[in-house]
Amino acid sequence: MTVLTPAALFVFDCLTSIALAFAAFECARPRRAWGDCSACGQARTLKAKQSVYRPDGRSFQTAMPQVRLEYSSNLDSQFNPEQTLLRLNEALIDSGLFNEVDIKSRIIRCERFLIGRSAEDHAFVHLQIIILSGRDTATKAGLSARMLIALRDCFEPLAGVQTQLGVQILDNERETYSKEFV
Image (cartoon, rainbow, N blue to C red; front, top):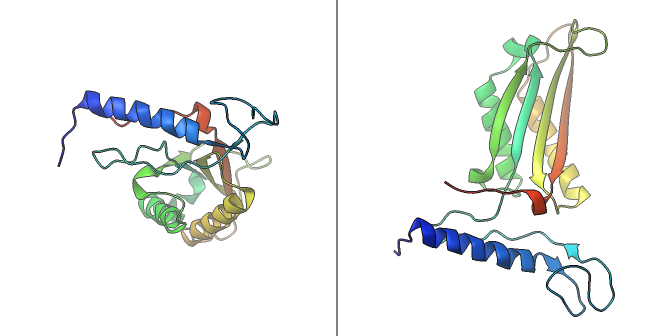
């Protein structure tokens, strides 16, 4: 096994990033390195990047998702935060869209909240999943539906309290997202 110095890994990462940037654009007509198609003038379309692995075995692709689960504090007795995170991560892995090591999840308890004009008799759970841009609407809708089912499985209904469960899939622009393993 070859052991590379941090400097060598940095160079590898830089070169791979440049190669992925060039490979990210597709057009059936003659190419220029950047910008619009040289033949038709149309903007090139972005296609999903494939995972690339560094010589040390770690994924290079600036992968996602970032998962943020917010919930109203009146649901404290209705679920276990650690088990909920595990269940949500398992659902993301089972979707086949993400590598396990790329999923970063957190839970945020909202102490002060309102639903309409009061917090009485109401509760909420909002799951926000930020993914890299490039996936089609059908893929994102399927992911949203899958995650809503997983979320529903994590909560017991609270008698007399209407609980709203929501899932939001957000795109993060590949061109502006940066990530580094340290």
